[in-house]
Structure formats: structure tokens, C-alpha cells
Image (cartoon, rainbow, N blue to C red; front, top):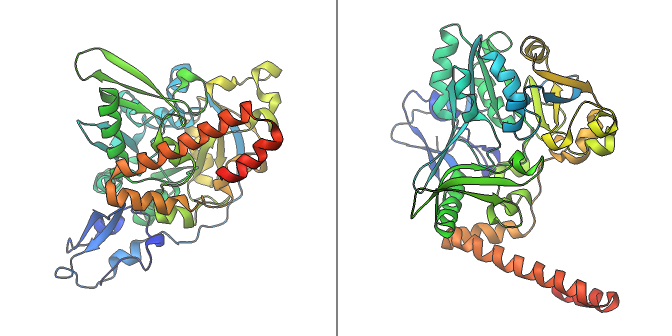
Length: 405
């Protein structure tokens, strides 16, 4: 067998195929653009087809009747450590009384970042899984640990992107709804871990800091898109905090603009209203427009600056999960159409522009410095446009704008 997948757009890089190969013929390797794909050792492969059989990327979900809520964690400490409404931590902290939780941890070493799924078994470890990691996590490392936990009779709560949830469900079908429960996130797409590591290396050198923690979004700046990098100065022991935003981060800007995801993200079969997890969580962007009555300033119970989640209950197991472990969650029914208005990944996959090809080729040729060079050029042009718009009359500005396109 030459390949597990027929097209690069059909592989999400979950790595499950490598865990079922009894011949150990499959390894996960980076391509020239930093994305991981399964590589088959033809000398070891016996063409048994187990890798293709386990692949869940284009498996069809059963249609589910969605129940949709605006929701917030009433535990203030957990809420403020979360990216939005703290639903994952609220449910996970209660679930740990009965089982283990599998989620994503980001570790920052000298010049690399290691982002992978791990299992935790106590609430003190929960902080390691909180917060958004806008990068692909390595998931296959946790499969054996999950198998041991399930085989020993433990309950497991798994949280990840929809494609990762589908892969886990394919691995452990017999445990679904009894021991294994799943949470999928409303995912925009994932850049490669290699790309992110190179960005962090450049960031550390530029800011003269050894990063210990990197939050793309941090509640210090209210509920929104601003984040925080924390670490020690390279020439001393003082801790340094640096604000992260799309305006001052090439990686973050290109992430939000959907220009640096892996190929499969633009063809994602799970970017739709029909969800793969028992429950789905994300930000309830647009709450002030669609459900203003929920906000504190309008007599409601939610404070917008602290974050508000959307919570979709997709299965009977999801109902049981929230009923049994959602004691910290306060929720109100809302229309799924309102959530879909801004969370477009509930309608269709992300779309990139012609810029993506230029970025990927620049990275292939010159590493992250190639991407940074394009970012600086774009930023320069944007700044020029803004200055011109402030000082030039509207008619002349319209002519200049057509030239600068």
C-alpha cells in the first residue's frame, strides 16, 4: 500500500492509522510545508488495509436534533481562565470525579512547542487543558492511554476538533455513550505545529523572552481576540507580559484570515450543523445582536466581557453528559441560526484566498522568515492606505484605492 489517503485534502493528520498498524509500518512525518501525514514503509507493509478501515475523515454522521444554548460557567475562577464561557472546564471538572479527561496541552521548550492530547485524572491538572490552541495538536500519542483507561472500566471525556472526535469514535465504537463521551469544538482550521514552533522561535528572539505560556485569547483584555504571552527575559529573571493581537502577530492574522490551515480544513466534512461530538462548544459571537436580553446591562444574567459560549447538545449521550456533569453551567435556549450567523464553520469549511499559495511557497523556500516578510509588506500597504484615507479627499481616495489594490 502506497498511501492511506487518496488525496492530501482527505487526510486530517489525526494519526490514528499509525496506531492500528500491527507491523509498525506507518509513521507521521512533516511535509515541506510543515503539515503531518502518514508515511508507509513499503518493506514492512503487508497491505492488510487496517489503516484505511479505521480512517473516519469522510464517515457520515447520523443526523441529530440539535438543542442550542447560550451558556456560562458559574465558577468565576474557571470562567476567567477560559477562552469564552468556560463550558469545557465546567463539565470536565465534574467529570473527573468519575473518570479521566483527554484534552490538549501546549508545552513551550527552548525553541519548540509541543502541542498534544494528554489524559488527566485530577482537577489540579485541568488548567493545562484550558485555553485556545490555534495549532494542530498531535493526538495519536494518547490512543494507548485511552484504550487502557477504557479497558479498565474508566469513563473518558475526549475534547478536540471535529475530525479528531470522529477518529476517536472510530477507534472506540463499543464504548460510545457508556464510557466514552465526546466534545467537539467549532473549529476554524489548524496550522501546522512546525509553523507555530518557528513563529514562537522568532517571537522569542525578537522580544528577548523565553515563553512559558502563550494565550491567543486572554480575559485580561475582556472577551475578544486579544491574547497574552508570558515568560522570562532572556537576560534576566524578570517575568514579562506581551499583548498578542491580530494587528501585531503575523501568525495570528493569517490564522484568522484562514490562510495557513492544512489542506483538509478547506474541505472539512464536519464544518456543518450536523455535529460529530456528543456536545459542541464555541463562542456565542453576536449575543448582543441576537439575544441582548441575556446580558447583564439589559437585565439578564450574563456579563459579556467575561465570555459567553454556545452549547449544542447533539446526542442522547450529550444530554446525559450535561445533565450529570453540568452543575456549574447556567444556560438559556437560543436559536441555532443565530449562532451560525458568525460561526460560519457550522455552515461550511473555511475558505482561503490566493495569498495562501504565496505564503506556503514562501515558507517552503525561506521558513517562517518568508511568511513574516509577506506580513510586513501587507501591513505596510494597509498602513499607507489608512494614512491616505485620513488626509485625502474622498474622490481622490477612491482613485488611489483602485491603484493600491
